[in-house]
Length: 330
Image 1: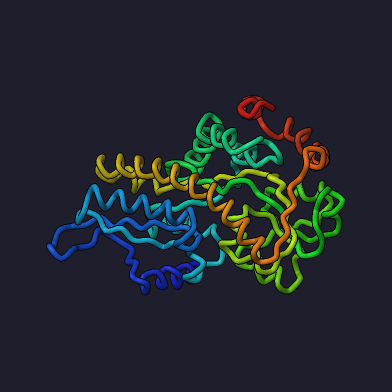
Image 2 (image 1 turned 90 degrees about the vertical axis):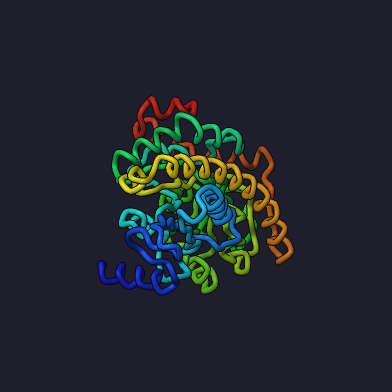
């Protein structure tokens, strides 16, 4: 594993991202290098959030820092978004974002199916006590410091077989899911399959997967709309992506740089949410232009999906603390 990591880091170095101590600029002054990373193309709302952070730091500190970007680690040979954790932990990257669930009850609660009625409610939870609980767990269990949350947003289901108006329409379909969504899709009658994001397009293309679940922005960003026809606006789960740094390294930065980074992340979160809202609208239009059919559920149809996953909420009463459940009025 370490040899593979070394080779991948070498790829970053070969691309002009040099890892290590502060570098020396043309004036022979020490410059702090800040490398911001993620797993989306430069046009995505997440990458534009990273760009805002870098621009803010550049404007404030000028030649004192050297900002670099690795917008999409998949483009430089990495297999999973999870590689971002060790890239930050080892100091290869200064900051990254990532959907995290392992050992984090608050983020698991936030991802419960049909929990939030709209984006405003979901954002209020992540900006409030639920988000703080998630941050507390991450910081207690890792060497990361969490500065905020980007928004992956609400997820929808698509497939290549038939339109989905009710849970029975999902029966027998193999749907790519995140692990946290597996139980939901089992209850909806589908065959959930956890698959790394870079392999999803190929799986859909070959028919190894009948469908997948993602926000529309992701569907277009990763070209999944080219191999899917039927979409349903299920809004079945809301996901966030913590924005994190290596805590010991970050805390060793000058106070002014730490403060500006925090302020820049706050602005980037606001921007990314705005861009994501528009990206969902634009992506739905792209899907339709490509021949995709988007089903909008009636209140009665949506209720059938909510009823189908009711056992998850019964299990949640025993799985999560009373304090955590009360944060989302459960």
